[in-house]
Length: 487
Ligand code: HEM
Image (cartoon, rainbow, N blue to C red; front, side, top):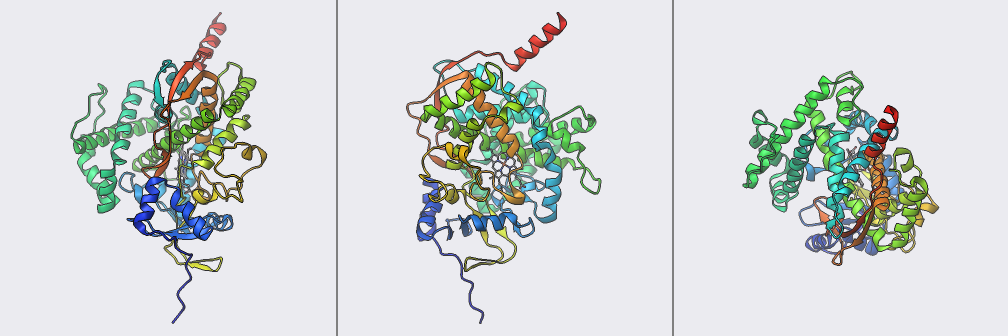
């Protein structure tokens, strides 16, 4: 009889206690496993298949170098609410094909056109703040990032429509992240739940309600209504983008309808729809949770707030930052990077092996869920001395290895929106220190918490507004430009 493969060691706590530990803090099962066994171990949580956690940069390198055929993604938790065409569910050649058409709109050099919108949405939100007002950073950044996505990604420029769509999506996200919905999806399987919701929503009855009426109280009727109206608006926007398929539009939707696969075929409407919703789901909470930690650390460490403000003042004076400025702010960037090291929104980066892998005397059979783990790698004392201390100088002194620092994942499935997210976070941080004086609310005490499949601040980081300075906005600068041109 062939000897049984030697699997990596298994963390001691049983599946229920591991789940309780994860609820207490999503990084903790990995911290404990690493302390018990070092950088390669297995962990079993109640209701989950077993995970093999990887905190060894050499093995992360091997996994990230694997093609999309050798290591698949593992996004089962999202099957209840994302459509079948989303890039997240694709593997092998289908995934490569999707990446080829979806990457160009997010390429670094394309993003210059979005910087102005990002600042404009931030300025509007800041201007609505009143001294003494209490607000969470997370809700503030969600507002800004949803408004930005509506314009830069979905190409919705009509204000009423953008507001209605934002409201519908907020409602939708709230429902699909509700524990009852997540439980139903786990018990019944994500796909049947999605099909049931779609059947209730009946696309033929879909219509946009410009008068912004209240939504039904019954949660099932409300979800059906929300999905129906989102369909109406998005398919209408897709049709509009196809009708205007010249080069004048710069939003991501317009680029997707112009894109062609290698065989010359365009993306279908369902394909475009599923990718748009993926960008929204993948793009706004990740950004708002990360920004909440950025602001939290800046307010907890005022010397860093001052350092970022000095960087902004020296570069910009009173002017709003633009795309080129965002490439010239090492201190701001290091603060964001350090916040993502200490509080990665993805506690692990899931992969499923499609063939056996031998490493370090262990064997992992095909089907193993191997998770390169920011929860382990970002806190290794040998890689980051005094790892729990907030210290952005780490990122000023050297460039982090992509196999030791992975807030955006890595390899062939790494985050497509990283350049967009980094640009937005740099601009928002600069604008915030330029214009706002804030303090943490007395009860502000954010702990890393499992929020849906992400890890974010338990309380959203409540702050109190002391002052919002009025500075010339981009709109003012445009008006000035127009009047001096006409005089
Ligand atoms: C701070 C903000 C963000 C963080 C921390 C983040 C993090 C991540 C992570 C950890 C992954 C998984 C990578 C892997 O499996 O290796 C991912 C994938 C992805 N992200 Fe982001 N993300 C952010 C913002 C965005 C934005 C703004 C967008 C789009 C507008 C976006 C779109 C995507 C997409 C489409 C994927 C799937 C890529 C694939 O499967 O090939 N993300 N992101």
